[in-house]
Length: 177
Image 1 (cartoon, one colour):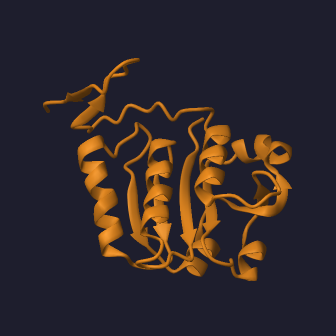
Image 2: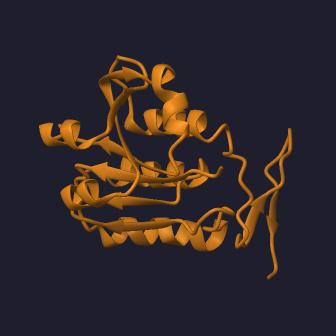
């Protein structure tokens, strides 16, 4: 079964969080998520991620990757799958990963600034990737790796550029389509 995974990024601060929010989106894409919702519209950030998708591919064999803004409360209330909030205060992932893998669709919620208390109640699960402070990008990468069984070596069908793995040099292959 192929699980569709979506990411909701809460608390993106335009101007201040461009780099980390870009890393959230790129990590989500590279590790197999279908898309990222942001709670704020940020055209420059979205265009930067879309540019990566145009060059490196956006279709991972399951879905077409996207970035867009949304009303986070409406999304969490209407999402027709399992809602998993990643927080250092949650239950350890290892205790719930088998249950999470049973879901057809998963919305992973990660925060930047302090997450509103309502998120804890709207989530079906509050899950910890360790009970210590660390990066939401790290938490997302570990979560996606465990959930999707290390599918991060994805081949994007519509890629124009691909890496040719090498021990000694940087090799890029341009794909003519």
